[in-house]
Image 1: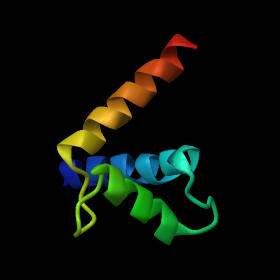
Image 2: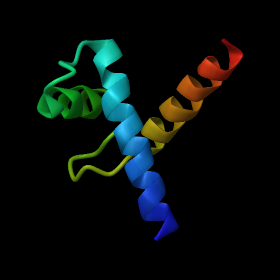
Image 3: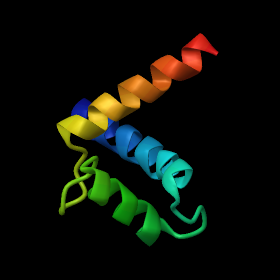
Image 4: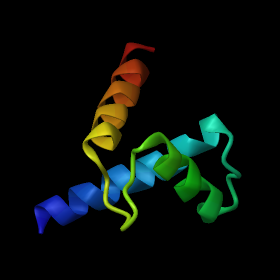
Length: 65
């Protein structure tokens, strides 16, 4: 159960993060497309290892600021 919550949290962060890479902030389809294109989310919608690394990297940058 905790792992499912973590998956959801990572996925939500990545979808919001995809806006920085050109996704429309009001269109979840384009956000999923960017995430899938970058390999952060697989075809089923699960966060990949690359997605987890991207979340960790992005959060580290925010802490430094």
